[in-house]
Image 1 (spheres, rainbow, N blue to C red):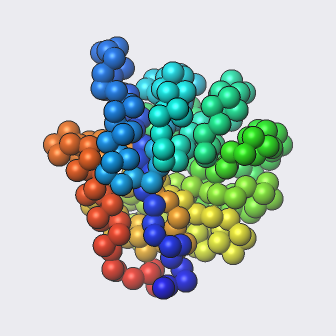
Image 2 (image 1 turned 30 degrees about the horizontal axis):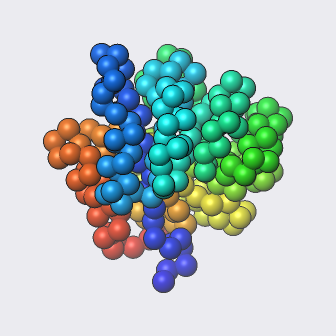
Length: 251
């Protein structure tokens, strides 16, 4: 086995945009619980939901109900906001990923500034960790941010792949190189590496050249594909693309 691979690559499916469809008409459907069950049946390793401060898609009740229903891992994305932290402490998901959050953004626009928020983050991380919740920080592949994460003793990072996924031309290779270097540094410092944002079937092959990946968290592209194929088929399609890749490591 290649030492740069971390066993079987896992898939966490973000079902936020199932809730987006529901909230567009303020209906009771489509059900996030039904979506989570379909993802689990298809072979997903975990379910990710982002409880935003503005509650634009996932609602508090979704988080509580999913925690009761899921038999696979639950990953709760959240800002370092005391109200949301308190909900996480009550729900006790398997994992929490702390992300930056702006009210006006369409989606998360970049990584967390860990180096500039050491004190603020350390308090929340301790409270979550004391409840047995695994903490991850969503960051750009920058050495300063990775070093700061190590300083906080956080066991996981999620590398922000959005800049790479939106790149074109020569920038594409530069951004991939940054992700490879970031993952390698994190591994050297004893931090586990997840990745996510903007990943789809068309750009996943180069993503899989990033070393030491544990989990890919993918949402929008899977839910979008599900419009045409159904959710189970869309999850299986992504799993197939992830696990049948044989393109080698980044060199």
